[in-house]
Length: 146
Image (cartoon, rainbow, N blue to C red; front, side, top):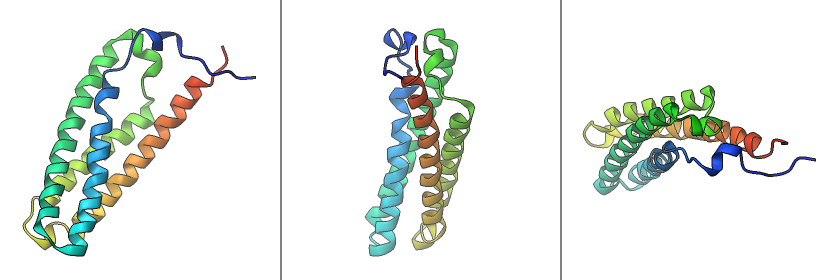
C-alpha cells in the first residue's frame, strides 16, 4: 500500500521557480477573460487590461526562467524539478504569450478580434497541458513508496 510522504530533499529545499511560475499562468488566463470581455463589449479598458496582463505575465515568466536556472544548479531541489515535457510546455506557453503580446500591440478592434482572442485561447490550452504534466509528476513524487 502506498503512503503519502514528503520527498527526502523537499524538507530542506524549496524550488525558487515555484514562486514565479503561477504568475504567467494567472495573467494569461485573465488575458483570455479580458479579451472575451473586449469582444463582447468593445470597451477599450478591456484591451488595456489585456496588454498589461500580457506584460506582467511575460515579466513573471522571465523571472521564473531565471529562478529555474538557479534551481537547476541546486542539487537539493533535484527531486522537485519538472520533467522535460513540462518544461517544453511551459516554454511553449511563454512563446505563445510573446506572440500574443505582439498581436495585441496592434491598434483597435483588429488587434484582439479574432487573432488575439484565438492566440489567448491557444495559450490557455498550452497552460492546461503544462499543468497536467506537472501535476502528474508531483502526484507520482508524492505517492511513491519508500
